[in-house]
Length: 124
Ligand SMILES: [Cu+2]
Image (tube, rainbow, N blue to C red):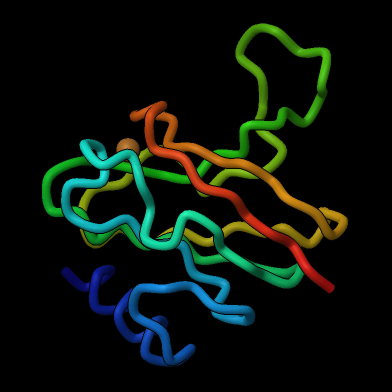
């Protein structure tokens, strides 16, 4: 609960609960995400820097992993280009850096629910 409140505080700080806007730097999954296959705001626009992932789904554990791998030719147990961490339960808040990404579109998914998809749009 403490972590969930921290997530709420972060969302309040950036002035956005839900739809991610430029500068919000927050990806959220809402209740039923593993069924809908969606994060809240399939396209999340961020500037290079830190991104916060908040799991607001009371039912399932989720996370954010890039579809692209760190080593493109990797085929087994590949490290994603960016990831929030292992799937976290409701209230889980994770932070990860996208400072190494150049502007562009980066599709991501939940490592526990491969149907959950979104796109991180990195802008300058
Ligand atoms: Cu998931």
